[in-house]
Length: 156
Image 1 (spheres, helix red, strand yellow):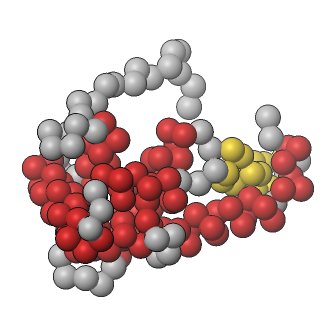
Image 2: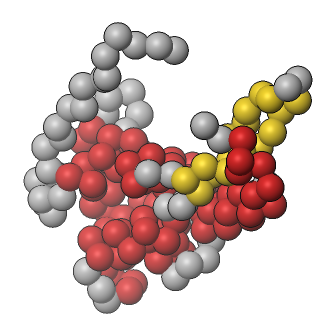
């Protein structure tokens, strides 16, 4: 969809407890129906669980987990000459972080623990240790890009 000019990127205020902008953006992705206070309770509760179980600063665990999940390349469908090709494209940091947020939240919601706090904490700890569903998704994305490297010349 074409635009006359670029969309304005709004500044997000850092979260009150850890004073981190990336954490606020994660909370905003986790938030459902505008219930920010509930999203904050879930994230801070998960951070408390991480601190108890891993004996490490939870913000460091979160940042490392995010880096572990963030993809470097992805495949984009392009129609060239009547057939669709999966073309590998590099992912910039902002889009990669957004994908990592989405994957962590989606796979945390799909987990079998009882509360969302436990689910999110478990998914973040698994991502920190480079295991779990969100890491598997990243590896699968990288494998697809590697398999379709022959079509890299079609990107523009």
